[in-house]
Length: 134
Image (cartoon, one colour):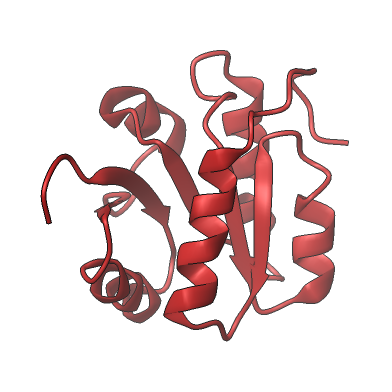
């Protein structure tokens, strides 16, 4: 692949899913940067400056949803588009209320769907708005 790859921060608690996403994106023009174990998503985002962030939200773990809100609440990360994935339709519908969430996917999904969600998120201008999710 010629040129610079688009950096995608992947915040996914399931190691197997994180590795699958990295493998899928190895076939594209995207470069995956996984959030280090026990890493702070906002601080890491500020440091690596990804073009888009993918977040896997587990339906029963409120801390996963809080990451989306923390990114939206930080002036240095709020403009980074977010793609939310979950096994729960309800979770992705709720996450879509956050101004920084550009796309949502319900697992399972394939490479084409994932790549399209990231491309769509990158093509939209981040919402200009408050620092909270609705």
